[in-house]
Length: 170
Image (cartoon, rainbow, N blue to C red):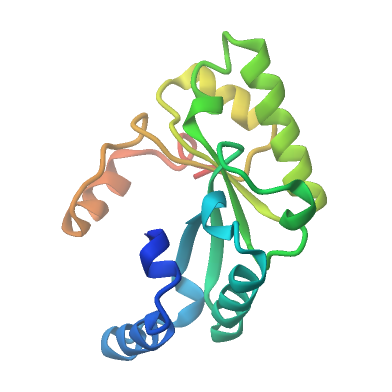
């Protein structure tokens, strides 16, 4: 389960307690909860490191969402305890016909691999772009090619609609 955090939530001192309460109430194991943050949330590096380390110590997964569109330095990327790097859809869009976007995506995937991070490509909308991402050995993809956002109750039906081969990398 992935949850996007707003900057306000990220810097809220009670967030850790709220998350613990939700985990206890739902029975969800912490390793199955992924918190998505954006680069702009990490501008105050020391506060971000403290917060992210507390999440990691709780057993939560952390994803850097919309990577490449924010303000953080690559030197900080190695310091943040993140598990997943999500490539922003603005880079993924039309990678099959835009060599510049393809080069950027391939480079981000290589960077993530070297940092031992799982890569998620956002905004996959056609089979050609999916094929390129598979060739680049992207770990996971998400986008309208598979589904628009849906209610949780609709997820099993969506899984049933796709063959294992089509979503092998999702």
